[in-house]
Image (cartoon, rainbow, N blue to C red; front, side, top):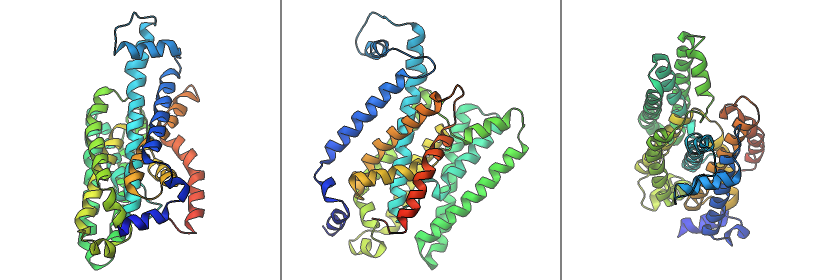
Length: 353
């Protein structure tokens, strides 16, 4: 009850008059409309009638009034990419919301514990060794988990002498720096004409090569981790007020913090493994979601998932439509996110609520 009262005091009164189901339904409808629009746009435009016919034909038999090329573009190229954009955007936004609440810091992003740097090293090694797409995803996922495991081990061993949260964050920064140095070493020894451009392009983030099997492999850890974080929403609310308050309510803060980190890391590593490094989504979207529903993680996490999916889908549309050559997603999110980050720095001087 104490936690609920504290959370409600932080939420603006006009926003509390809207039901969560109404907000989620509105956001879900918006994401659906964005997805339909994304299926139609691109270098090979597909008329709306043909698009609806192609989608409907997979549910009920229809006489085709569209070209085979249009069906191939919609079902085999754009649909996996659109679903991947929604899934990856949701994953990064949810993990960002969890990390910001767990560490009580609005500047925290999903890569704070080194998962992005670890995944980058794994992918770079796989590309250097010529292991193919499956090998890239596997090593990126594994090295991302390894980086966070190293961070947690350092934080657990040294945090007993001070603030465990601060020690864990500092350990994540150091581990991230170390893995980034190894990525630079891999790039240094890579073939500058073939391997190095592939590594560089992966590090900038893209969904161009994602297909349905890739999506199926990533969906299980992402959806499972997001479901766990959503179930831990009340726990995150309590942890936001500090360890003393959490222990007073009977929570085992160390184990719960580890569980949240494991779930958020699983989500982030699986997302990065298929998309590469896409920055600022996990930093920007949680703040936008918090403006809409407040800091209650039971509301914040599902809203962040929908907003993150819609945001990255829109960014991906811009990346593949603005110019004849596709722009890496990391560049687009950085251009959009940098001004917002400056506004966030200005706002943080007045505190965070």
